Length: 301
Image (cartoon, rainbow, N blue to C red):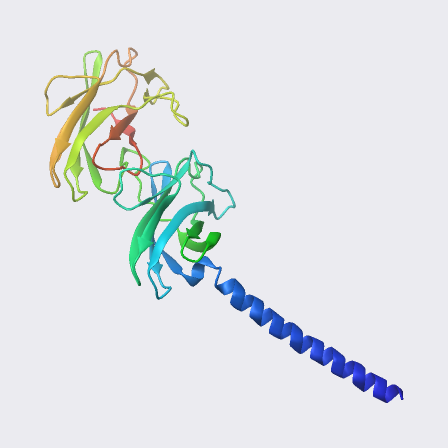
């Protein structure tokens, strides 16, 4: 009798296990239709430090087999490999590559079958200690076509760091090349001359160049020498023309311009040997990765 009961119990357990597997499979099938990864793939193509920011570019491909008429994408979180997260509205933004603004959310936009959109996420104030070696990006998507709300997809990448960190000029954008020409005293003035070359592939219109706002979060000086003396009210000239607080100019692709920064009442002790300067660069027709151009520990001739 006990044998029959045991056999019956065995078969009941077996049936329950089979039913549970079938139920799980059905649930997975249902979940797959509400997963962002069912409709799009993301592939990080660039992860690079620029100034005090991290720039993450990625391709988003429509793999659904159909047209997606309305999809909105936002960076749910960007986390470095130490676990620090950069996700607040004031320090992270996303855009379709080439757009002139970087809002938190892109879209709604449409994607044709197999179409690929290039997108960019930029986070400010990234890893100020320069210890992070990788990032994890989580993107949130909303697809109106299938009533998909705020589902996520993830990607990871190693960080590339080609920045000048000492004795040179740290660019604010991969498309802008800076070359130091001279740094010399003349009486109570210090003159620093450098070339700006436009390698963006586009004509840059109404570029403005001026000293960085020292009140901006993360900045402690506009200019500072190696003795710790700080300076403000810098003046600039283009190609040895008259000096002004701010320059405005157009610059064609592959064109170079010489800019000279003048610091008045410089180092009355005569003992300073290096200078660091933060200048701001903006443009109406192009969005730079970082607005700040940093001259770091430039030797004084």
